[in-house]
Amino acid sequence: MSFATTDLSDAHPEAQVCQPVFADFGGRIAFHGPVATLKVFEDNAEVRAMLAEPGEGRVLVVDGGGSDRCALVGGNLGVLGVKNGWAGIVVFGCVRDSSELEQCDLGIKALGLHPRKSEKGLHGAQRDRVLTFANVSFSPGAWLYADQDGIVVSDKAIHTD
Image (cartoon, rainbow, N blue to C red; front, side):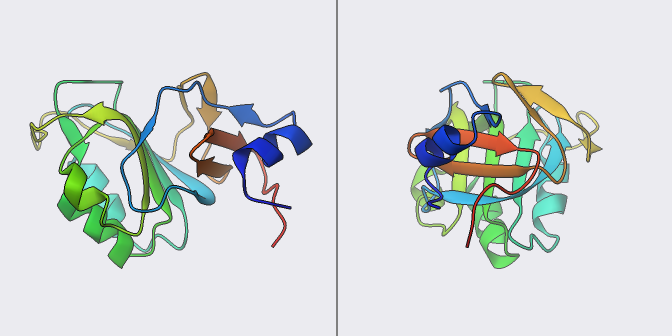
């Protein structure tokens, strides 16, 4: 079975499909892996902390509240994600340093770009909770598949190697 979201969606109609609100910013367009979740608001300190941990092929899903007032991921965090083995990052918010992010061998989807950095210590963060945005619930340990056609999320792995 292919990792293409179109094929996975056809073969698994029970899988959730995100609204088409995300754009691609990373150097890897197609990516997949188990989900790790983080809820933040205009403060990326915990995003950095999670990307500094071993990614082990996971996808970090960040609920940034859809804020368009600052970026939660930039070039330095993209490099950190690659270094620590993350497969990708999905941000319900903005990113920056787009030319640097597209050089990273990492899938990155976000709502858009913003040049302003986030403020550290502004708000708290919550890890490993169910996040809901773009008509999808993202649970820690669920599987996320992303490519140029969109994002598919399943409670279990739905691909074959």
